[in-house]
Image 1: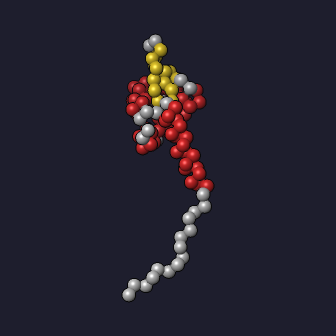
Image 2: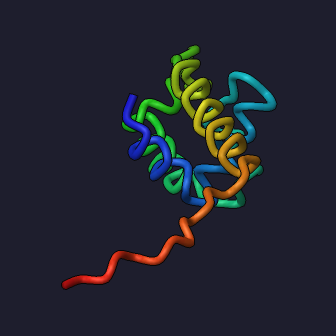
Image 3: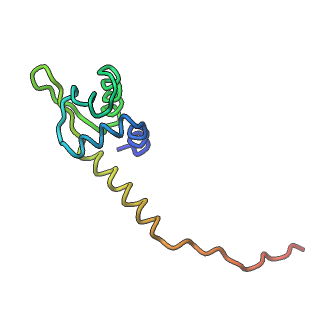
Length: 105
């Protein structure tokens, strides 16, 4: 799983809104993203394609509709990155040595 691809994919506000909706609702029909994101269907399709190519979401055809869901591996990786960043933010800063550098001869 490529962290950079995942982060680039979810860094765009519309794609992040799609991921948030999927995280809260589970499987969502592609047609329902136009309401949450306030964008046209072609724009939603473009954003879903970017998320699919990054491995963040997958789609399943049900009749004439495609339902999308978060990929468990991508969701786990995003959660792990969040945990890593959160843990790092809680650590005490490293102390910088105050010893003077040795004089050169």
